[in-house]
Length: 382
Image 1 (cartoon, rainbow, N blue to C red):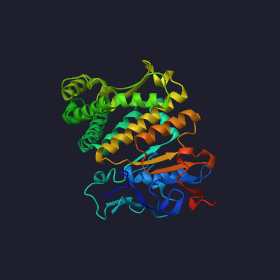
Image 2 (spheres, one colour; image 1 turned 135 degrees about the horizontal axis):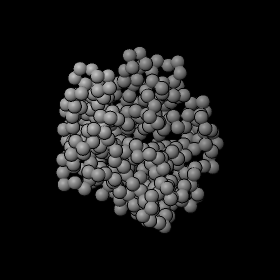
Image 3 (tube, rainbow, N blue to C red; image 1 turned 90 degrees about the vertical axis):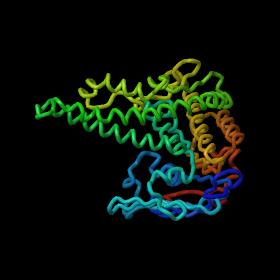
C-alpha cells in the first residue's frame, strides 16, 4: 500500500456487510475522520470492531468469527480502500467455516502476512483491564502489538504457542497413562520433554523482544502520564524470571527441567514467558491495588498511546484512532489533557463513537457527524 494523508493512514472507503448488527455500511470517511452518535446497543462499537478487524484479522472482543456473523446471514465481509491505492478485505463464510483475506487484491501466503494491513488502535473504557485485569490481559496487549509490528516476534510467538499446546497435550496424556496404569504410561516423559527445546528457543525471542520494548517505552509511559496530569510517578516494567538472564533460552530450558514433576502432576507447563507480566506502579506501589480509577484509566490510555507510537515507528505514519467513548469515566480536565497530548504526538484519522452529541470533545467537533440506529449509519441531520 502506498501514499497517505499528512503522515497518517487514511481509510478512504469502508464497506461492511453482515457484521454483527451491521447489515450494510458503506462510507467514504474524510481524512480527519468521523464522529458517530448513537444510543447504546445500536451498533457504534460494532462499527469500530469491524474497522479494527482489518488490523487484527479477528474480533477485538475475542469473539469467534461464527459469532460476529449477522443473524440469518451466510457470512460477513469487511473491506476497505486505504491510503492512495491500497485495499484490504476479509470475508468469512459460515458454510465450511472459511475465511479469506486479500491485500491489494492478492491472497497472502499466510493470514499473518496481512496483520496490520490497516494499522489501528482501539481506545475504550474497557482498556482499564490492562491495569486492573489479570496478567493475561497485559500479555495479550504485548503479543498483539509486537506481533503486528515485529515479524520475528510473531513467528516466535506462533512457534512457541504451538510447542506449548503440544507439550500440554503430551503432559495430560502422560498423566492419564500413569493414573490408569497403561503400558508405558510411567515411561512417557520423553513425549513432553521433546518440546522443551523449541519452547526455550522461541521463548527466548519473546523475552528479549518484550524486555527491549519495555526498556524503550517505560520513560515515554511515565512522561505521558505526567502530561495527562498524574502527579505521581507511574512506572512500567517487565516482570519475568528470564529477562535478566544472560541467555534467556538456557534459563527457560533449566526452568522447564525443574518444573517437570509439577507439570506432570498438574498437566500444564508452569514455566515460561507465557507466565510473564507487565507491572505498573504508582510511586513504587502496585497501581492495580492502590491506584484510583482515574489513575488506572490514565495509565491504560498511556499504554494505548505508546501502542500507537509503536505502530507509527513501522512506516512513519499515524495509525487510525478508534475511540469508543473513551472519556466516559474521566473528568473533563483529564480528557482535555489527553487530547492535547494526542494532538501533540500526531492524531491519526479518527473514528469517534459516543452516545450523545454533547459527548464529543471540543477538540473533535470538526469531525464529520453521523448517526447510527439499529445498525444503520446515516449522515447527521442538523
